[in-house]
Image (cartoon, rainbow, N blue to C red):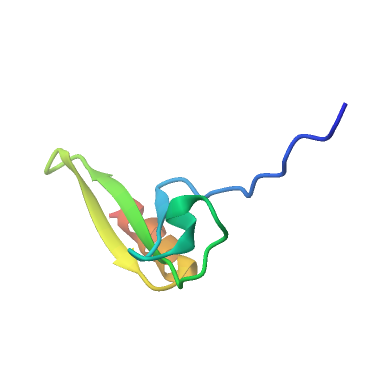
Length: 69
């Protein structure tokens, strides 16, 4: 039996957003610089709050800070 394909751990609440003409959209390897959309739930507003960042580190930092608020 072959090995199962390896998957990267994806941070919870963060989604990779590829550019419109990225080869990834047709199943090929990514050839763009994707952005990262972080999301947290606002209990006060009873809706999700989303923000997009150029780096995953910025998205993680914002999400961690927003979860504390």
